[in-house]
Length: 206
Image (cartoon, rainbow, N blue to C red; front, side, top):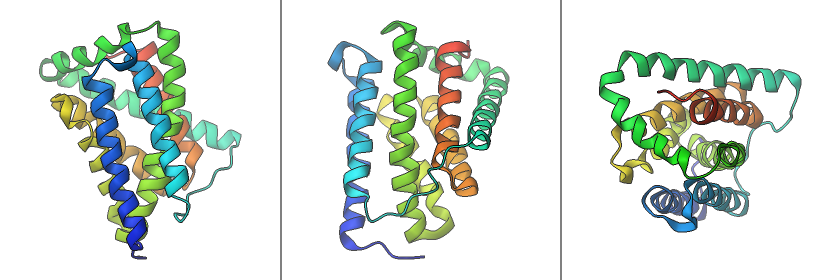
């Protein structure tokens, strides 16, 4: 483990605070008139923050290959299948919460959502896994990915939707482990894209 320098620790803390504030705006305001516009802008801001203040943090492998794409697609499909099974097993408990999340699908045409999800998946992984998780793993060892996943869930708390918070925790842990195992930024990105496109656009859980 390599302790983070003081300014790196400060940047990580500020980054988490920024993510919390941005996700508050995304879910609980009507700025830009569309959830998909808000979440796209918010994700880009987070990625820019990571690019500017995360220069001292060593990221993973950024190579793209057929193997990388296939691993990403397969893992994203697996995560979706897991959510599909979980949703149907616990439908009576989570159906209402899921329905409130799916209201955002009507904010804009689905092609806007589909494009937004590609952009946000790339930007979120750049911030949460390449920057934040890497920094936390460097300073806290193997528990760093868990801390990152907890923060990923934490920023959803203002919604008051516990099912959404839990879903974010499960997804954050999954992508965190995937990133630690593969050390590939693009495997996690493709996994994130496939999962979000399936669950929000093509095969919503309802």
